[in-house]
Length: 492
Ligand code: LFR
Image 1: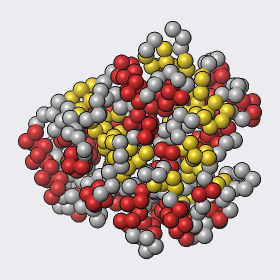
Image 2: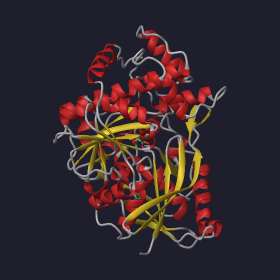
Image 3: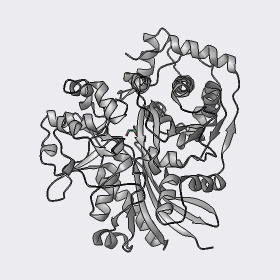
């Protein structure tokens, strides 16, 4: 049988990769072509992404395709959510985009809610209130008379901006737009009332597209630079979490997922958005997915905690994940537990000190060694997962029988077992490249190679290895959960 090749660009907040996907003989295979870091650049009191460096990395990946003569059928780009690029009337990018961890949006929701109530914003959008949502970024830029925003003809979310650089076509892809807090999930349109307050207009967004729709083909300039032909760029689920959840190898609908990377996104897939008093109070989100599905989930601070500690340790030691996991296993459990989502961990100068500070404030021993710090992070993440899983169980319209862990974090079998013990249902871990797989499968669907999401998931589960876990040590984890709740703070 013939093989068909696809090119996926998957950009996360700490690293990116270009991946070749190959479909044939009822299976899918992946090959990583390039991998590169994605740095936050701090200057002049702001945090930026380098969109040109990311574009160049995509070009580098495409050059590998050209060099190896790989007959790719199409290209799809997914990235982290909420950030955007401002484009001038002449089509030029106006400046590098701010990173969602930029401090300019601290307090932005509260300011926004002086114009319209918090309840109404949630009711319209179903999106969890977080400082960094595009709506609050834009309203802050508007309030601060940002010169780039004032000059902006168009606003393009990250995957759309990169597709624009490749094709010259400006689109707004549905899944990435849905996480902005500007879209109404019922109408799948931008909500004028919300845009007005932020001083922006619907015409400032590109043509609206859904996953699977074509965006354009590589410009002549990109064709010349890469040596490739007029390859089509297809809208996948531009939001990485959307692509990742599309790749959950589930057999039925009664599952929850944990997409584990820089963030941990825990939730369920539902047909209709869940927007009610409880979801509002627990600040759960309803993000648009593929084939009309909704991801009802909550953001949990994930591997960000450890990634930042690793950066600090790098000055003296370059610990591998295996070394960190081994060291965590060698020290006592539950000695100090933190709320990973406390504001002090959002973007501290020193994550190690922030963890120490939280422990001091809650009268717990300050973890000292890298093993103790890693253990504190793993224990705390698993306990936070338990807490969120409990809310999900209360709000889900079906009994949750299984937890699927996907993404880079699903390679961590120690944390997988901790998570399984904490939530008390069987866990299936993998694929670790869920986002890229979802991206590739959506291209395969657009090219008519798979029929729907169920067929995609079936093909994924026959193509990849997963690892299964059963809950253990129920009593210890229940006790630990009490300790966690006793030290749980949202104000540090
Ligand atoms: C995960 C993710 C989350 C989003 C966060 C910030 O990579 O896309 O879904 O809330 O990054 O954009």
